[in-house]
Structure formats: structure tokens, C-alpha cells
Length: 180
Image (tube, rainbow, N blue to C red; front, side, top):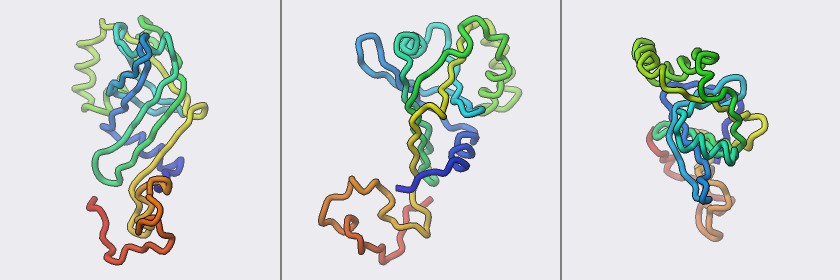
């Protein structure tokens, strides 16, 4: 299972339109996952929960989070961030970091639509949370490239002993690859 280099991680997280899915823990201990817009800047994943969002309440109580950012096609790149969310700006301090929220919105919609969205939601207070990637556990993976062993599709622990892909001598004779 090939890993992404730091350069590849940074490039992937800078691409437009990838959603982050943030997992938090409810007061009763059950997990919950919410898809959110994000931006990766200066080594932090930044997310903007609204004042009444359940995941902000969960973070206030238990700041440990897991975030996945992935793609549905292509190299099937995936980044998993497991760390601690920190409230960088409290609800109501929105004007101090409007520029960050605009950059986030522009990752998902064009500038005119982002500006309209921001003007229409300006009176809805939100917080800014950040997860420091340097202090988090980061796991990445992607599909093997054409010149890499196809057995790299999964971590070695997933292959049952005695199966063809578990064999150190396994080679894809056909050269077939998943279509990208």
C-alpha cells in the first residue's frame, strides 16, 4: 500500500473540492461523522463549525478527532488525520478571520458564489478550529502506480497466508491495472 510523500500530501490537500469528514464523540460516547469544507494551511487543517453545530459541542467536551480526506476516482488517495482540535477563534470572533473563511469557500465554489455565500451567512456566527498536523498521527495511502507491485494495493496484513498475492513471488502476469 503506497504512502504519499509530504509533498504529495500537501499537493493533495491543496486541491479543490475534496471534502473532509470529521469524526467526533457525542456526550453519550457514540461516534459521529460530518462532511465539512476545510483548508490546509501552515500545517493545520482548518474547519469552521457554526455556533450550534453538534461537532463543535463535541470538540468542546472532547477535542480528539479523526479526519479523512479522500477522492473517489483517480489514484484513490486518502489522508487520515488523528489528533486534537483546538479552537483558534471562538464563536463571534468571525471578523478576525473572515479571510480564512473566504479562502475555504473559494476551494468549493467560484469567487462570486463564495462572496455571495459569505454575505448571506455573515450574521451566522462560527468558530475556527484547527488540527496541527505536526502533532497528529497522519496515515496516507493510494493505489500503486503502473511501475509498482500490484500487491501494494493493500497492507500486507490483509493478505491471507498461502494466497497468490501473499506470495513473495507474486507478479501480475497480465499487467492489468484498475482503470484511472
